[in-house]
Length: 165
Image (cartoon, rainbow, N blue to C red; front, side, top):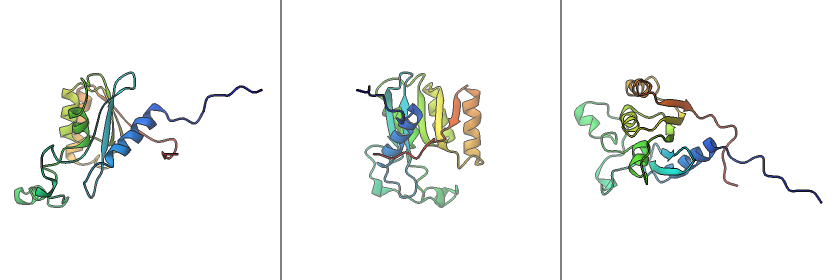
């Protein structure tokens, strides 16, 4: 009789938490961008999860979901940007205990406001999927802030397509 062996094709921790970020992102009602974030401690225990959306108690129909409009005061106020809470910050708000010393997994490289929240909460590493805004000033500033605070960041590159079996 042969002895059973453990599976060899299980998910890595990075794949697991990025998959979880993908899943929680599906809660977002944003018609153009759904992002998720998961914060875990050194023991791979989930501390918090979040997705991009309105602050609690705010009627989603009372504000625009538009992306276009620029930063001119009237136009900016007609976009989602001054109102929406990013997934990274929601994950911090939703944490069940201190996130000091933790790792944050997220879809997009964090903006400068999210970077400030990451630094203030003493998260030590950011693992992200996409850096599509890398040349935009707010994200350039974010990298400068994270580097100045000694926070590591790295891009997640999946070894395989993540799917539920």
